[in-house]
Image (tube, rainbow, N blue to C red; front, side):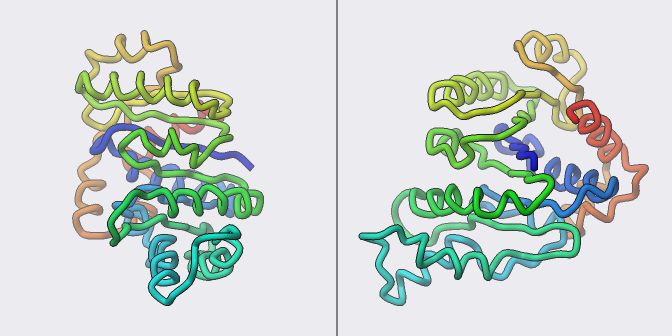
Length: 245
């Protein structure tokens, strides 16, 4: 089992990249895979054609609204069966979603539950693909503390490069274990920034090719798993994944 985390600033194409990586593993027969949507915006399900009934946050706050206590013994012992029942199960992949939180306060409890559920689930799959939130807080909380590969997607802004530097510092400071970190450019990453990406001290694997079909599929709510194998975006992700693996 290998765990792959995809991170980056908002709008760089993390979620669509995770969907295309899922397509790659499905196409080469490396299934079953587990998809984890750790972004409260919860877009991954739409991009892989998965109708998620309940998220971790939904289960947690329904439990609390019904009078369930989250104090004392770990609430995971009481919530885990309910959460595992709500995982989307497909023929080729499963999906678990942290979901939006509809109450005041931080995401501590949903994050902690996701953190504890991942080891329970992960060993049942060949690959685990994690779509990270846009910020850095998930790194401080070590939602994923032991992974194989971290992939950071860059855009053309200075903030994107600075975001990676901050993320890498946090990863080292909080001692997240990993084998390798890779950088890739999003579909609007200009060629003139290739040298800058290569000088970041991590292996730069190229950029995701622009594909107007990806944009139209996303707008129409169609699964990216149904993109043709000739899709420029898919072919670039395929090349990147072959390079990593």
